[in-house]
Length: 280
Ligand code: ZN
Image 1 (tube, rainbow, N blue to C red):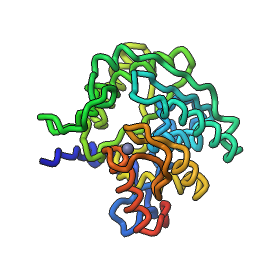
Image 2 (cartoon, rainbow, N blue to C red):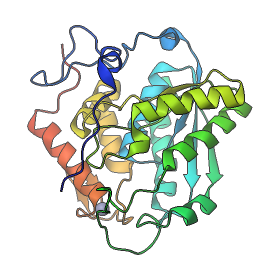
Image 3 (cartoon, helix red, strand yellow):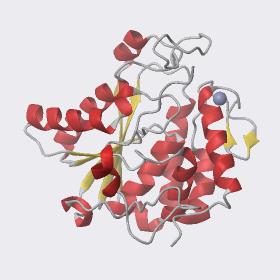
Image 4 (cartoon, rainbow, N blue to C red):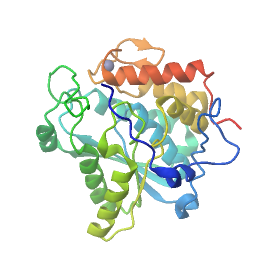
């Protein structure tokens, strides 16, 4: 049975992302990434992007660079099957700085945190040579329980030391798999816990939270045009199998793991809609 897709976190969450006059394609969603009416909108703040080198976190990095004055990145080494994504994240960083000079000065240090012990606890298909399956909870066995909670907690500790206020992640409620640690409700609770536990005022920003994979491409185009779309197509890495060789229309990958299937589906939808950005 297809797992339940978690709903957006209520109308308040939706309204915060809606800007009058902007709509995607046929109007299925109305959304403007720059419109979130919160006090930090005009804050030339310091941000930390949870950056894996995948499609989603690459778009998040561009989003953060367009929004914040200083942006650092953090990657987690938790025993991934393949080092490919750790390599590609450096390529994405380098290419963004080279192709978007307006963002180059804002792109700060990269950090890698070793979470190999957590990877051992997870012990799922993400880190072992096991077939992809759907578990009894309706989640793919690529799901590492609580992964984003752990990542964000480590990120917050790093952000505390680095003086970074905004924690930016590509978590998304519209993924096919409905990871419970990607829900905005979960992240709101974690944001509160982090701020209490670290005596901080972190803001956890999730620009992709209510977007489909097709709309994530729209956001990329709105932020950096077709140049950014091409950069993400060519250099970001999503495939669970670590395959890069062949270039498909939607980028590199094996083409039949769940990550590739999701990426290909989103690309196909976006291309079929005429590759829109966030058009008036
Ligand atoms: Zn794949």
